[in-house]
Image (cartoon, rainbow, N blue to C red):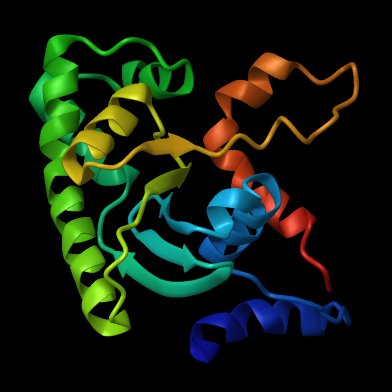
Amino acid sequence: KRQELEPTLEIFRNLECRLSLVDVDILSAMSALEYFHPEDFAGHTGLLDLGTEISTLGIVREGKPRFVRDISYGTYDLYKRLKTRSNLTDEKIERLFEMNETATDEEARAITESLDGLIGDLRVSFDYYHDQSGQSKPITKMFLSGGAAHPEVLKTLSAGLQIPVLCMDTLAKIKWAPEVDPEILKSNLPLLPVAFGLGIREL
């Protein structure tokens, strides 16, 4: 919205800089999907950008964005449930997700409980999209970008939505300098679609 964007634009005006493009995470992630997974972009695919407090669902069909909706759920909600349900510290939660450590049974239950509401919202969003678009063809898979793309999160979303939910493979087409640690790239795989989507955007 213009009124939300205006304070940021004013900063650049005061610096006498001209912005060529202002993008949003979900559209940037869609650009990355088109580049790294063209076959899925040309198909019927969902894309969920998981933010801190707000997540955004996007749906692409036959090479075009068809639907975008914000959902009031983010990593904050997931971490809060883990703290209250499993008594995890911030440090333990950070290690669990950044290092993709295997979740204990109790941690897995807390993740599942936290994601129940998100899965319900996603189902409602899918139904609304199908009703509004008149499109009966099902969405075949969904990619997750943003924070907390832990294997347990992907497994729970896949089971709840009954479609494959996975991270984008953005590294297959990327070459990096020898001094870049590939393990750090792999551990931050869910965060790369937005950044790469911005990088490949044509101005």
